[in-house]
Length: 338
Image (cartoon, rainbow, N blue to C red; front, side, top):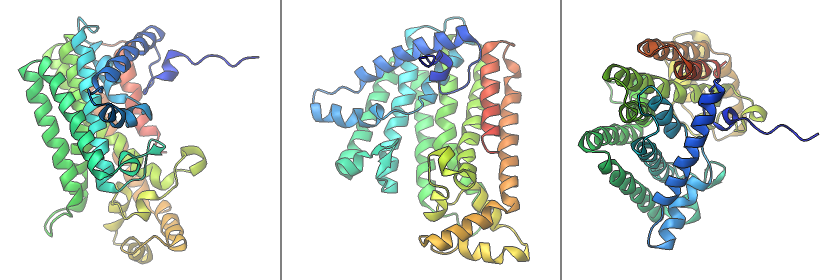
């Protein structure tokens, strides 16, 4: 017997229970994919090759999908402007990945060789710049308001990237500093994705603001849930090596929460968190201690509270399959940390 073909919902980056809505979004995502392929073409074949490298490696395409879903709250969700807006946010996201990989000296992205590893840092940086410029060209087609929104989003995104490279000052709270980084790097563009969809789909200003706030919160929560999974997940299930951030000394939500602990029994963990964990034995010890620490539950509770807060904002939307899909995604963010 041949296995059943995947449903349209299985092909989307977030759970959409309503079959009609799921099928509609899946078809619209095909339009977005074709448009993206056209937008990254350059008159120089090498530039096209470099710009298409990460896009062809895959990715969830969550941001353009959110644009399409948010547009469903309006009176005209199938306009060309909605597709253009979906391309804007995805090109912006892709551009940021090229720059991120240079900053992180990453060798892999989405299971493929990163652009900086395949070519060099100069090519990766300039390719990111090319994608940002293409995103800006498309934004100009959407009008002055869209340009202003995109500029503010880009400011937040870059500020988040810069903050990530700078340690908090002596008087700064490291946890608040980190949350600002995540909100800037991740929450800002997801918020704009929801805002663009609502605006160009013809939703009311009230719904637009609610969806933008929802996107900011649920996007930040989704990134923070990755922090927890980095510690708690099994490599067989997640496909990732547990404790990668921990080994690389990247401050994450559970680590920062554990570091403020005053329990005497945490002395060894705190010592390890401030040391070089490239050694396999020390890394394994730190990972085991962190997994059993109350900070893991605190981190989970924080993510759940953010996801629930995001869901509460959806009260501005009418009941129906769109609101249900957004609520289900917030629930997914909360439950994926358990």
